[in-house]
Structures are given as structure tokens and as C-alpha cells.
Length: 193
Ligand code: FES
Image (tube, rainbow, N blue to C red; front, side, top):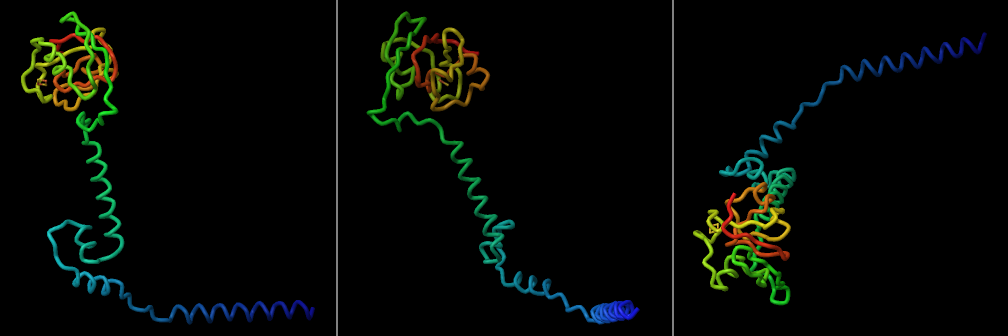
């Protein structure tokens, strides 16, 4: 009986303590939120620029978040620049030049063509009158085709191509003025999609 009374008193005291603390906590005034004031004050010290967010923040020293975002944008730019980099035959070192046997079917001869040389140039060196116009991969006048119609990307690499689509290249077509051999094959000149 004494034990039960003791437990009841203990529980009562604990409950009273909790209720008192709750009332005290609830009546305590909430401190004024100064976050907005601080933000406005900081914003007023950041110089205005013509750059869109978040660049003006990072330039004005407005915080790490802006700097991180700007860094990310630079990374994307580098990626796209890398994608735009084409094959440059002039960058092939002398000791890396390779030669392939190219059969010019219509001309009836097989010649060696270096991978830093175009098929058109190599054919003209033989004295053949091959078709061309721009010589820069911008038209299809110089078009040729892998003789058996296999995917041309297995045999050549274009240093410039603004005319042929992926599916046409897969059907064997190429621009001989900018096509450099990467394997030996038979070429039909004067072939366009
Ligand atoms: S001559 Fe124009 S793409 Fe080859």
C-alpha cells in the first residue's frame, strides 16, 4: 500500500513538472527571425552585373553555392567543346602514319593510301579525273561508296562532314574529299546517296 502511494506521488510530481515546463516553454517569446534581414543586407553589397544568376552571385562573393554552380557550368562547356573536336589528319605523327590498300573499282587499280591523306587526293595523284566541288565536306559532289555497301565508318574517318547522315554512312557512302582510310577496302567513286 505504501509502495503504491509512493509510485502515485512520484508520477504526479513528474507530470506536474512536465506540464509546468510545457507552459513555460509555450509562453517563451519566439526570437525574431533575422535570416531575411541578413540576406537582404548581403544582397545589397553584391554589385549588379549583366550576368544571369548564379554567375553574379559567385562574382560578387555571394556564397559557395553560386561558385559551385558556376564551376559546373564550366565543366559542361568543356564537354561540349570536346564533342566538337573532329578528327585532324595533320595531327597524325610521322611515325603513326599507316597505309592501306584501296581498290578504286571504277578506275581498275589498287593503290596505297595513307591515313593522313584523303581518298580524293590519292586518286588525283594517280591522274584520275575524280568528281569534287567544295573539297571541304560541305556538298556530296565527291561522293563514293564502299563497294559491297558495308558501313563506311568501318573503313574511313571523315575530317569534315556536313553532308552525310549516319544512316547514309552506314550504307557505305562517304565524302572522298575528307575521307581518310582506317582499313583496306574497295571503293566505288562517283556514288552518292
Ligand atoms: S567535294 Fe564537297 S563534300 Fe567533297
